[in-house]
Amino acid sequence: MALEFVQDAISLSGLTGSKLKSEIIAEYYPFWWKITSGGDKANYNWATAIVELDAATGEMYIKDTHETILGSAGHALSLKCDNRNTRKLTIILVEKDLDCYSRLKNVVKRRWPMIDIDEAEEPFYRNRSNIYLMNVGLEDAIDTISQIDLGNSLFFFDPLRGVPFETIEKVARSRIKTYYQTGTEFILFVFTSDWFLGRDNFAALPETTSEGNWSDAELRAVGEADALFGHKLWRSSILCEKPMHEKEIDFIDLYRICLHRWFRYVLPMPFNPKGKQVFHLILCSNFEAGVRATRGFFCERTNNPEYKPDNNTAHRNFCSKHSEIYGGLRRNQRPKQWRILWSTIYGHEEGYCDYLCRDFEGIEPDEQRREESLEWLANNGYLIPLRNDNPWNIEITQYQVNWDIIRTELGIEPPNSLEPL
Image (cartoon, rainbow, N blue to C red; front, side, top):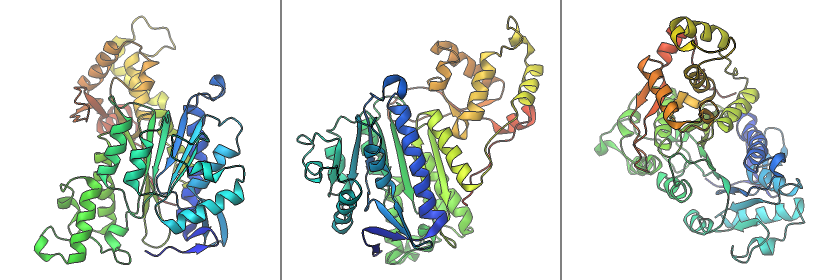
């Protein structure tokens, strides 16, 4: 697809697509940085990094309103340059397209003249500015970035349609060394509808698994989807004649499962730029509070209802069934089994948990007792044990909330699926 520009800004359409996406990124970047830098208590002294792997020009021109706004890379630079506390924040902007990259430098010169572009383009071992500009391909960038001490890091993959899973694994493997280690988050862009509508020289996926009936263009599209998922198992669910909307949902759900290999929580946020077009921003994280806050940002911006299950009703129902575990507790105290369950229902995307979840540490510091509480909840039907084939080959039982039991026994409905504005 040929890129269009208005001055230095990449030209895009969609108030409920590109502009809304930019607004959510603009809120999330400072929120993420304030937490991961240690905040005011730590004098923002913890090393952090935002890595934009498809930075574009840093500006977007919105055709619908004839306005130029910051893109995600621009918001990253604004956070770095317009906040006096960001001395330990590193910004890495990667853009392989030479035209985009030239315009990115123009935007930097115009908006943030204090940035020394010559230094920012220096090899990392000579750059002392904490701002890096790279006009290289993704693989070369990842090799270089792996040599930089990033601290807590947020990687934004913003390609045309989707990023190969091999690339995701390469970055994840270099950063996430232990079981669902915190300190690294990904945001992934997927132009979901392109897989079913096609675009320019990209064909829509075929509606049959019979390769002999595919055109050459469809064969290339299937190959690109194989790379996106990192396997071919997706084909039987997607290459069929189901309605397009159902296939889009299944497509993202299958992709979500792939991402769970590295991340406990995966939050796809849908956007509808115009017509039948749909894309998703997918937040991947091992930090409960960050995912919960991001869902809140999205719900507020898109009129999705915030998830507010009735704690009092649920607790009364729980207490009436399990009064035996309340012995020895003061009137307002709650048993740890309940607190862990409610934390998972309310604050864990998809209701996933295991005994190493960070928020459980404040409920029960002892790991063995946390495991025992999760086993108790599973034995009583509130949690479902899951098979967990993880890249660290660690035998840890993962669980998911049993929403059927939560609904019937506690009177709590699961959160609604997110809808685009």
